[in-house]
Image 1: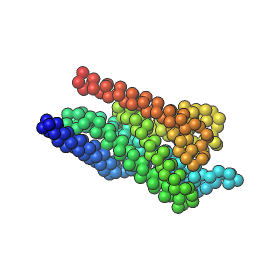
Image 2: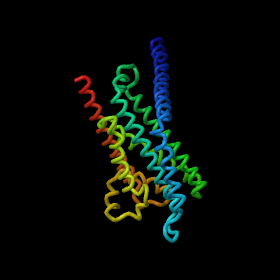
Image 3: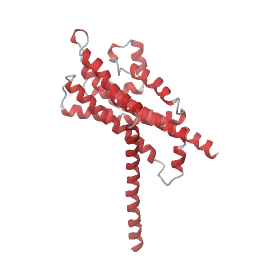
Image 4: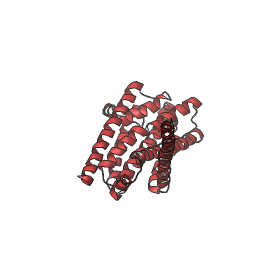
Length: 268
C-alpha cells in the first residue's frame, strides 16, 4: 500500500513539471519571436496589407459577380497561417541548429519533444492572432457579414492548418541551413500559394494552373477554408483532409531523416 502511495506521489509532481516545461517552452518561444520584426511584420501585417489592397479596394469582380472581400478572408487567412508555421518552425529550427542550441538542449534534462511542442504552440498562437486581426478588418473595412458559427468554423479550419505546414517547416529546418531556410521557404510557399488560389481566385486561373493545384497541399487547405463559406470548388472534405494527413506524415518522415542525419554527424 505504501509502495503504491509513494509511486503515485512521485508521479504527480512529474506530470506537473512536464506540463510546466512545455508551457514555459511555448511561452519563451512566443516572446522570442514577438521581439523579431523580421518574423512579426510578415506574419501579422502582410495578410492585412494585402487584404486592404485587394479585398477592400477591389470589393467585387467585373460586373459585381464575385465577392472578393469574403473570398480573401478565407484564403489570406490560410496563407497567413501557413507562413506563420513555415517560417516560425522552419527558419527558427534551422537557426537553432546552426547556433548549436538543439545540441545544447539535448544535453539537458528537458524532454526531447519540448522544443517542438513549444514551436508548434507558438505557430498556433501567431496564427490565431493573425486570423483574429484579419477577421476584424474584414468585418469592418471589408463589410464581410457571416454568421457567428461560420466565423468560428472558418477560424478553426485556418488555425488547424498550421499543423501540416509546421511539420513541413520542421523538415525544412532539418535539411536547410540557417541562411538558406528563408529563401527555400519563399521559393516553395509563394508559388504554392499563388497556384492554390490564395491570392487570386482559383476560378480565374488558367486551366493548367487548376490541374497543377490538385497536387498542392496548400490548395486543399484553401479549399477546406473556402468550404466553410460556400465558395470552394466542391472538392470532397475527406479528400482534402486525407491529402493534408499524408502531407503531414511525409513531412514528419523527412524531418526524422534529417534528425537522424544530424545525430550521425554529432555522435557518429
